[in-house]
Picture 1 (cartoon, rainbow, N blue to C red):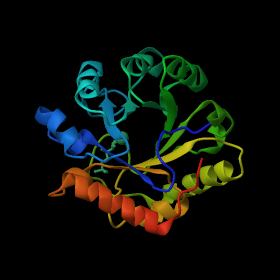
Picture 2: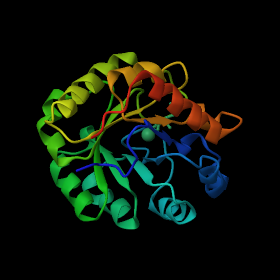
Picture 3: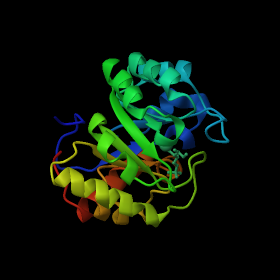
Picture 4: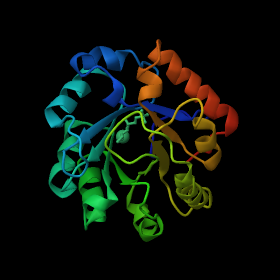
Length: 232
Ligand code: DX5
Ligand code: ZN
């Protein structure tokens, strides 16, 4: 089973609209045509100290673009709030391991509602306690900054978690897509690619560029030059 509909051979790039102009989200989605996923950061001012957007805005984005939507829920109580994003048509719905006592139950509900299910881990969260349950997930999102804000510096120490996940996927023990989020740019993407990331979230590096679509293509080329894509 492949967790993505992406053609083999290319690393995936998921621009984060957190760094876009929220008053022009349809245009900002169009500005990153050619992206693999559009990453939408949902923050509730409880799980993280910042507040962004919720389901009604995600529904509007879904109606405005054909790019598959990758929802990153930085929220408490994903049991209650995650499945509606899947029902609305998000392609991948990721919630935080730190936000629930029942991650497998949430993943099952997301999948039952028709989306891929992702588990996110903050920089300080160990992966080992979650390795077993990753069988119930399609995506692992390794945070390479503290969640809450765009434009922070990449934390290279999280790459050990990427390497662990990559090893298990390559050994056939897990079927997940390995995604990284935070501080990805031209200076950091190669280290992440080398460690085995499949999908790279980039906010400020894409929307801060003069030509966001060209920035996406350049990041994909850079990652692809380092690591040949490993088919999942
Ligand atoms: C941070 C968000 C990220 C953020 C990344 O909590 O989850 O998706 O938008 O932004 P950059 O790429 O600027 O670090
Ligand atoms: Zn994110």
